[in-house]
Image 1: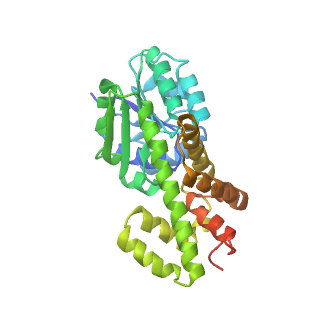
Image 2: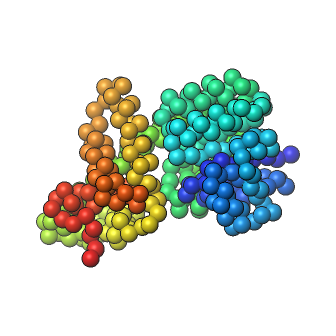
Image 3: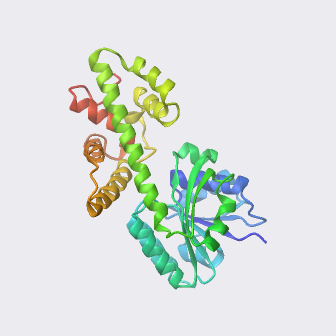
Length: 308
């Protein structure tokens, strides 16, 4: 008999992951239980996925009462901790809680201890990929926790929500979020390098189109995709960012905190984080990771926006 699965938190990533759980996951005859603090978002997703395949509930307590496996995908450490506090107010023995949020590894390890002490199981499962990849089921899922717990999650990762797993079974759950935090510095530094290169190409007369051709030939994939977004002006035109500047700064802050604690030098990340601060000042809540391009342009004597 298939376990009853629930999902808490329906941001850009969560909605795509739920879509693939419903469409490709082996849920048996069970609907996917949906909860979001703003209920309208859960209602909209249920309408899109089919009200016969989903069930919207009104509270976290309703989730815990009904579900065997509870996925969480929330914005930051405080929100995750508050939600788990509420979950643990109800009996959870025998249940599995899976956190897909990007939080500090210390937060994840503390959650694992608290949840296991209550008789439940816990898996840290952050994912790599943009919302479009979540929607298409092409995420990379990082899975950490006890082998017994991770084995219950794997039927819903590779081939369902993701294209690949990075398996840290029998490692502390915090190793998954440690990899996620470090991995996200690669993305931030990639965007910083693209921003600097495109700006230099424009100011030297090479031209951004010529540089973009080289990027497509040498670095197809994320580099080319981010470069295309920058050149199209998507980094300031988009009303709802794909990766909100506040979340990017939160992730950079976690990495820089780990760097300070371990005596690790990360000057490139320091610069990228400073540019995110300028993005927030210029665009507010419209700020996105590729908006770093505008900050670098502005710092270099050009307009923040690259299109008239």
